[in-house]
Structure formats: structure tokens, C-alpha cells
Amino acid sequence: MEVIRIEFKSEIKERLLEMLSCFSSDELKIIFEDSDFYENKIKVHEAYSKLKNGTTKLYSIDEVELIIR
Image (cartoon, rainbow, N blue to C red; front, side, top):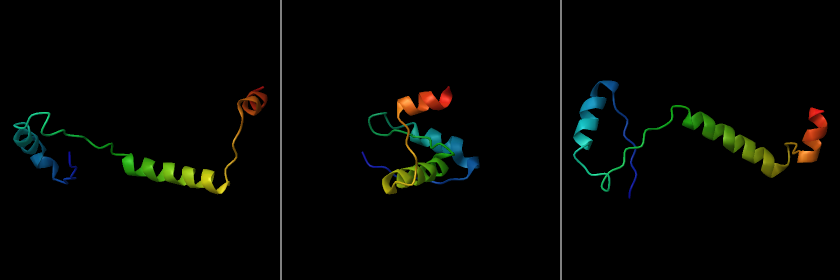
């Protein structure tokens, strides 16, 4: 399947969904985006970059247990 992103005014949401409902689930899948998706994506990429370049501290389970005690 192909993916497109459509931005629309909230006033037409119901009409748009009604129009799209004529397609079967095999033909069309509507995926609602998480409003925090892009913010979370940035955070994940930043954390991954820190892991890759070694600027973040990793702890073993044994170290965490010592910290907790």
C-alpha cells in the first residue's frame, strides 16, 4: 500500500471520513497520528545520537541495583 498525509480543517473531518468510508479495509486504512509523534521522534533521535557517540551513561542491572539500595 502507499501512504499519503492529508492536512485538513477540523470542520471537514466528518465529511472526509464519510467519503473515505466507502472504501473497504483492504483498499484503505485510516491511521490517526499521535499529536506528540514529532516531538517524541525528536527525543528518540537525540537519545539515539547520544548512545551512538558515547555521551550517555549506561548502567548494568547490577549497577542499578546498587544505586537503588
